[in-house]
Image (tube, rainbow, N blue to C red; front, side, top):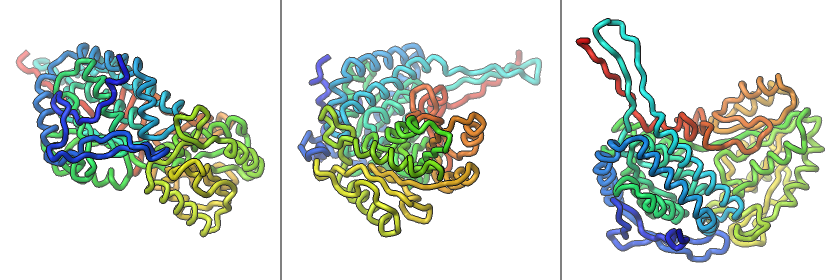
Length: 482
């Protein structure tokens, strides 16, 4: 397989690489230097509807393929992704900006979901239910829900796609995907590999667009779409939920977070600093499970600030293709302007600027790794998802207090804490109102564990044996006259 196969710049509908009917295109640029990378079709709501219809036609035959056959298609796709890991990683870094080492890791992480669900395809078991009547038998079977609309973000342009498409295909569903307008090239490259793996026409469809609202609304309201899977902001997720309600679709939402990272005075401080550093600054802080609020117990606060400040100062800011880069650019001008505004407002409200606080010299979209001390919950910065390389430091005194403060948010995606007390580990883990909790770990996601949040951070789970459930319907069969 040659990497040139991945240089796709057309949308993919019903097994064909197609331009927009209008001829309009959407330009894709490298956020590190503004370099023009490619143009992709700027498709309309009508073309999104046509893609749904193609997926619905393909569903009639794809759902009848055996689970084993679907698993074999997915296995071939996994092998092709890994064979092209380096080319995909370079493409990912070019259009998204993250350091190349992180991009390689994301490709492997994304591929792991394809491998996992290739195996899970054969495990969508039904059940036998003991009947209350001697003349009947009761069983259930699980069947694919139908056409799936998947809407993915720009921060993980490989992994967010495979985490949705792989379970859908494993279940026997067909898919229409709308990738983020900032990062469509990875979606098209993955699709080229899926085509090479032999998936039939119409099973996977990719609609690129510069009008995500019109296309997204079409996908989430179309009567032939039976399931919507979305990763993105909570306000958009709420809009999608309302859109899907009119046709009572299944909906999976992985939304915003406001992750606390709690460091108790009995923690292994070296490990805690390492954990919070990678949790906070990977992908320049642009992940939904990034640490947002760092709570440090009073007795170790000064020591932590000194050591953490030194660690943050050592981070290398630079373009993702530079070998020593650890913090790349933000995705676009809107993102960096937002980060600037958040930091300025925090300082105006009384936060102490300990480190950074300005654009970096490496380029227009680079922001210095920043550290703010003396932050309180009354400040606006404590109550929003940061999505940038900003750490906010809070002081706490006792366990019960910090649990209450950590939970005082409408979000509940991920939380983290460090402690060596086994009793405290259980109490805090059970007390935190989050869908995922890292205990002495700063990176928690993998394909075998359920990823998702509670409260306003989402509905449903991705990955693990539970990740295929929302793509299946349970059908109950009552057999009488026996």
